[in-house]
Length: 563
Ligand code: FAD
Image 1 (cartoon, protein in one colour):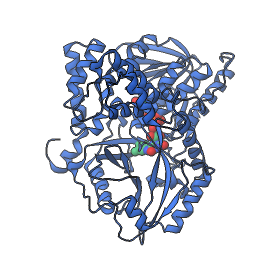
Image 2 (cartoon, rainbow, N blue to C red):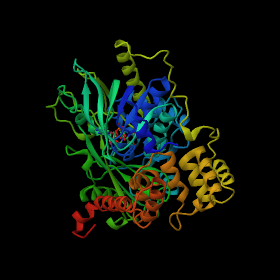
Image 3 (tube, rainbow, N blue to C red):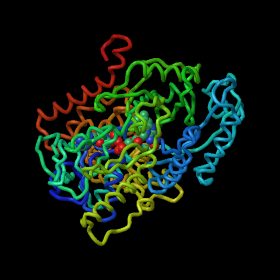
Image 4 (cartoon, rainbow, N blue to C red):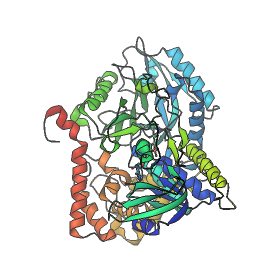
């Protein structure tokens, strides 16, 4: 069982490597290091992927638009990683068609977009999920009837990957745990400790649920705290120097797919400022994003403003004039911070969208290893570079355990991918899930479990066979079932109601009332599993409700009504 309590109880006093931050970067580092045979602890102040790693555009992509900035090596690296992630996590990283409509007098000319497509396919060594092809306006109209045809000259159709960012992070962390790492969530580093030479040798960690504090000593400490990078560096007594990051905020909005019925991801340029954004199909929903604005506030408080929502609705109006969206169509939103590298010359003015996406590994004078910048797509490779750096430091300090195994994280499947069919046939996996449940699941639910958990969906099927009540849908007409709550708590480190509602079930994003109706039932089930008393259960509910209300503040800003 991978429960949060068990992990906290197991947190060792001494490890080879302490990783701070349970986003995709930290999870990737813990996985790589544990698989090489290092003793590893990862501490995350809230839930896994609570930060940027659940608030991205959910694309595993080369970043077509970086070609314009001549960042060829970045694109090459990213498309190579796209291939690898599709191999090691085919249930979580799936090919998605992207349509790039070109309109006369607007944005780049068709020939230029086409040349970019060849370059993009070329940089993937022509191993894209499928090679691009050009659609004529009438073909575009057939493929995407909702898209405006006015001035349409054609549209290349190319392929990239779409993922569930929070689950990619979670499965990476669970794989690290399976390889021996301790993954402690709701565990915040409040201080970095150092030896007599001033070298960071551990951290003071506070249990954010029960308030207990512990010290974990480590031969190397890695700061993988995304937008919190500079704050974490500030926890050391050594001078952290100039900030490494210049974060920018990106917002997405979610609407029902019926309201914006796109069949492919549509690449568009905003009519006001020509920034690239996407309209992305997401099952029964469509999400639209993103904005890109500078942000220098507390990362914990980043949220959607009414201007962000209006900006995205305006973009939709321009491309889908027959499907006008209103603010009432917006089911939910998410706002995340890109942990972008600060420009080297701090005085030079740089436009937000031109800030480099590349990452950097910095070893401070206090020995703290910081990984700054990067992308979800390249997390595995970044993680392996960070572990190389940590291994070198351990070697220099004669702290390297021997023998050290080689890490092949590019070939080792994530947990849900073990046994996944070569032909990616989700329906076949769904039938196995249904068989395991003793045919107690509706086929859409079995399909949902196969898609969400990959081959591990079969284990959920078995849970249902043991107790058929677990097949009960959480909400009428939706596919989520009670077994998923049990699984989240017992196997996926969920410790708070928010963890389950937001990042294990997605109901916070997809349900019309963001899961508020079903939250009491989920809280009750969690109370049974985690021995919460009535007061704790009520607190969890209250906090979740407040969380939802807070996420709707933008509505208040726009019309003065209660959110
Ligand atoms: P995070 O996910 O933020 O993780 C850092 C973690 O550190 C947090 O969970 C935080 O709680 C924890 N932490 C902080 N301080 C402490 C402490 N003191 N103690 C313990 N824990 C602490 N990339 C792509 O490849 N494709 C995309 O489509 C894409 N779209 C994006 C869209 C947007 C709007 C944004 C903002 C980013 C996007 N990215 C995308 C980039 C990508 O999401 C990020 O690069 C990546 O998720 C960063 O992960 P991380 O682990 O470094 O940071």
